[in-house]
Image (tube, rainbow, N blue to C red; front, top):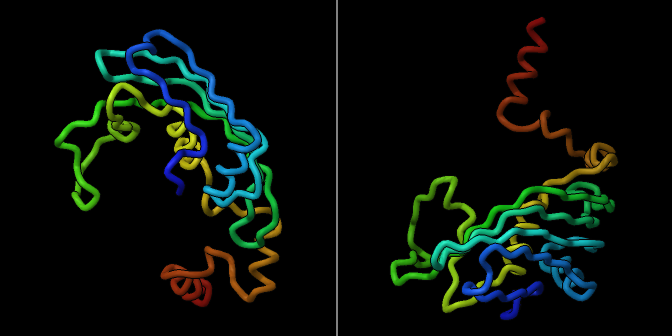
Length: 174
């Protein structure tokens, strides 16, 4: 990843209370994000978010919308994908007690979408990019996946693994 995020939108925490933000990625940003997330291309990416602030904690709630082309995980054919899902992100000030990269931490569901920031600015664009990354199915398969598996001599997923042998035993006993 580069030092500068592909979709950077820095906002001042002191000026966001009660505001709405619209993130709309341009062609250059979409191309860079497609490369980052190993997509064929991103045709559109936007987020409409309402911002609220409690002291230095900022909450962004809204909707992420995207249309992109992704390769099938099995056949590598192009698959059109549409994302339209809610987004909830909380930006929190960095503290000296933030865990390090090698520290083991436990989090609950409400803490999953917290992004620390330093100073007075947070990057709403990068948060939208990360939300897109989470919305991408890394194992997406298209309509020709079964044919590609068969041509490669690979069975269907349900015919492999520890339970496939048990299925075979059950079939013989009847």
